[in-house]
Image 1: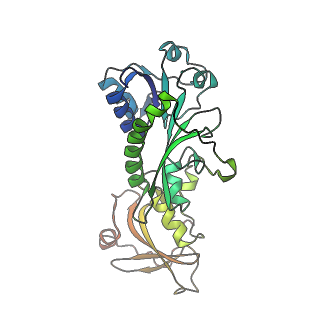
Image 2 (image 1 turned 180 degrees about the vertical axis):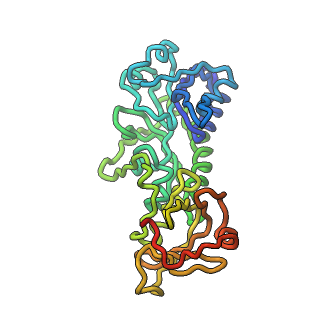
Image 3 (image 1 turned 90 degrees about the horizontal axis):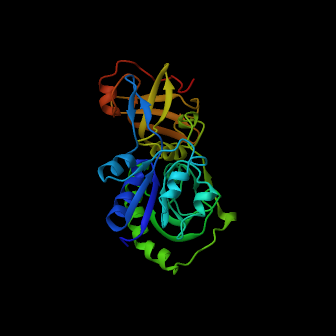
Length: 313
């Protein structure tokens, strides 16, 4: 497939294995990624992991602010096919209709489930027992195009968004290369998505990162895992923000007279909070102004007694 001229569109680390496999197997003539950002107190310029790979491989980089208006130079490259993976902008129809082999997307869910911008997180947050990669033709809708190929993995209670990210980024790269010949030859079976079965996942807001103790323990457990290691769930206690990386939950009625969100037990090894259907135990946290640590380590160095305090008040 070395004669295949590819333009790749992607931005985050998740996309990197896909681009690297395309570089090995095809002729990547251009990379489209999000514009550089100014970050930190020193206002240093930061660019995407995909741009870094492109620079290392002497591939031309395009960084349009709004691709729906800035696409002429991309089309002048005359690609045979355009591959996208977590690019971050809606691709206009003029681009979708240009390459002779179409525009192909590597999406991190088993479509039509979890269309949208945060499928990795919501596969865990929403309690799915499996997820996967979908290779699909792009159309003007949000992840609504025909399915070409899928590969699934199980989600276990030990998984976080970090582990799912790493597994699916590798699967996505290998499944795309495996599928490309059938796209070029026109031998793949295009499968229409069943819109009735579709679910959606918008980008996570800061407010949604906050733990709601009125929820069930299992739902909080899923939320914490679905935001570890990023963007990380949190709650407030005693006017301090606690980021939460790991919890366990227990469905019980040990504390019938305690209020939702109340710290019902504090020992040298445990900090237990009342939730809707029982309790959760904090296992790994980061208190505002401190480093991330296991709860035993934190409590052994902590002088404050939280018992009786209410989280998120």
